[in-house]
Image (cartoon, rainbow, N blue to C red; front, side, top):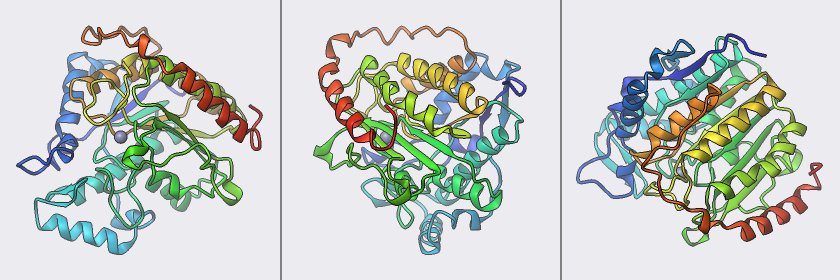
Length: 363
Ligand SMILES: [Zn+2]
């Protein structure tokens, strides 16, 4: 059921220039750089994506500070604002601040809201919000894991509050890391399904176990599919065995993708072995599901993805799948990881997860 066959891309030059990690570069923080967006925009331009008449470039929505307050405490918002005004500095090992941080993080929320509203208003069919800093680790009262404000949680709370939009929403988080911030906003909310696939790295203290299923009325609507380290394309796509039937039963009105691309094998932070083929096939399949379930209302919001080589190709693979065109793997992905498949472990995880989910879903 197409509206006008258009895909919106949220683009703003500030995301490609501002909130640059301070020098000398602290290793971890330095990966969340404006070059991420610069590399994507340069490649999309080179591929003529913005000349395609199905693509519409959209600016982020300008939002009031009170919108941030829907997802974050006033004290925390004021702290980020104040610390930004002081200029470059490190808040902790995982968070840096610049004079532009507060405004850019606010703009990332505005970009996410815009991407969703354009789809809901049927101006476009799907959208991709090329925003940063990412959001899915951010908590109500604190920044975490390179994230300042929780872009997706904030946008959902905005829809609920400002538009009285009360329909069901599915969030599918494909970032290599568990969205420990995002999940908490909706852990007991039966109207938001949170499905996360992530590398399982207990050594670093990550959570996102299979038995974290939500609470109260929301029990069964938080679903974690942890992948062993070094999982491959074949392993990643196993998620559909669980995701497909659950989405068809949940019947969301909207599907949001917390689109991290740090499971790519070149990513400096992620520890998986995915290629662009995973992101292409994932998008192809999720688009089919969205068209069956919710008139194709599908929104990608950029989260992680720190390889400046891979990120542009990953985004391009998503756009190609949304175009319903064929995608050819780039030549730098010549490595063959099929021998590394973690099929046996994945099957074990899958059957344990299915057993837990049968209490809530027909699976
Ligand atoms: Zn990540």
